[in-house]
Amino acid sequence: MDDFRNTAFYLTLWYAVLAAIVSTLLIALHDLALASALLAAATLALLFALILMARAGRLSEKRITRSQFWRTVAPQKRPAGEAGLRMACRVLEETWLRFAKGAAAAAIVIMVGGDENGFWRELRIGAFE
Image 1 (cartoon, rainbow, N blue to C red):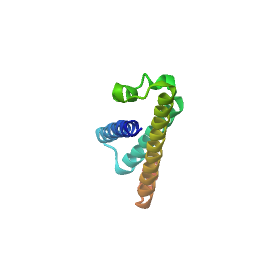
Image 2: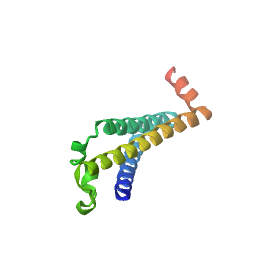
Image 3: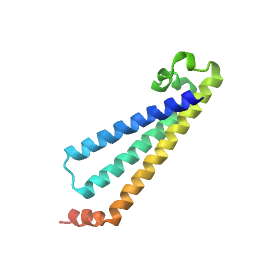
Image 4: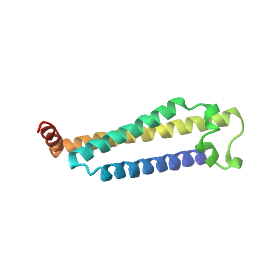
């Protein structure tokens, strides 16, 4: 059980790191102003959360055997039978939903932090000029 949890956690953490790198590159390469960059970062964090929730919703015992998660766990450490598949499915779904919750919370913090510093006012004023 701990092998499944660790594998699910670290694999999802890897997805989050890749999403953060891609988001940073997109923002940097488009040379966005600070307010626009914060808005883009929050939007990309919400998009990451949405993708994780969609993947968790589509997860099934049949699909998990074809996933990267299942292939990452060593064959001798995989529990046999339907009970093992259900357990792996539940562990992966819980992990993805926790990361989605964290990504949504990060998006909220980014938006509130930008509002506290007056960046959104700058974005609204700049849009009407």
